Amino acid sequence: MNKIRQKMRKAVIIGTFLFFPLIIFYFSPNLVVTGAMDGIVVGSFIVFSAQFALSLFLGRSLCSYFCPIAGLHECLALATDKRVKGGKKDLIKYCLWVPWVVATAILFVMAGGFREVDFFFHTANGISLHEPFSYWIYYGVLLLVVVLAFTVGKSAFCHCVCWMAPFMVVGTKLSAWLNLPRLQLKPDKRGCTACKSRWWSAGTWETPNVHCAGSA
Image (cartoon, rainbow, N blue to C red; front, side):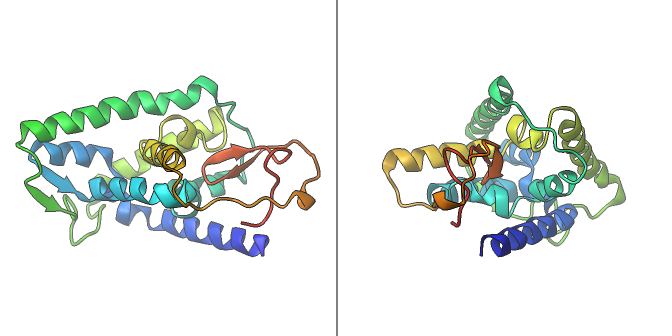
């Protein structure tokens, strides 16, 4: 059952990656700032808010099951097995995220608050990259992910610079503090071989001899 679930997970996130050019603007931190200047709640603002809300009950499973970048990481895993050592590198994304959140809040206040909701902001009939010139954004993001994967390690983008991860990290910690019912892995200790290797699950490195790999 676990193998079937993992195959389904990989199929879904690789599928979202293939559709990334169509939906990239719904994950754009820049459009959140652009919209905030005019008091507009854009699609990516709604998506980020939904990620935070869902993380209260689903943890960081969205990272492993629906993130387009995770789909790219699955493909890159075939070419590199270098692992991120973490530590201070994990703090980089918060150094980017906190000023961005603060700046967005200030811009909304300066614009007089939320005045309009436009989920399809700067898209053409809901499609993000509708002009050839705009593909430089898409390829720029891909280049960043690929370079980090080969220089820093697998999923380095998630560890170091992902602007969406903090929403789910904060949501997961808040859920634990409030003791809310949430999705969790249920380890099967009988499957542990004490290999002490590390594996990636729901956006977090786990150690099998502590959290044994098993069925969820």
